[in-house]
View 1: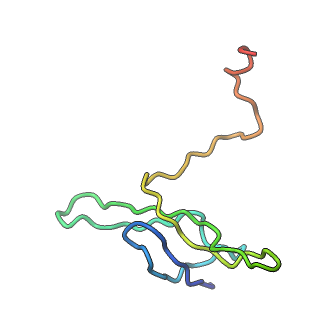
View 2 (view 1 turned 30 degrees about the vertical axis):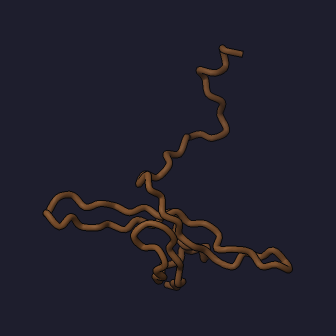
Length: 94
C-alpha cells in the first residue's frame, strides 16, 4: 500500500509529519485517531485530527496535498441517514 507524509497542525502533534496510509482512491482517511495511553493505567485518551487541504497552487488553483488539523472536541460528527429525506417533524410546522 502507498503512504504519504502528512503534516499535523494543532494539539500535541503540532508540527510533526507522519506517513499515513492512503485508501483505494489515493486519499488519506478523513479522520485520524491517535490513542494515547494513560500513565496510571486508566482508559486511553484519543486525539482526533480532521483532514483538510494543505493549500492550493497560485496559477491553476490545484490542491497541493492534505494536512490534519486537531479537533479538540474529540468526537467524529454523526451522519444523518438518509440525507435526502426531509425531517418528518418539521413538515407539519410549515
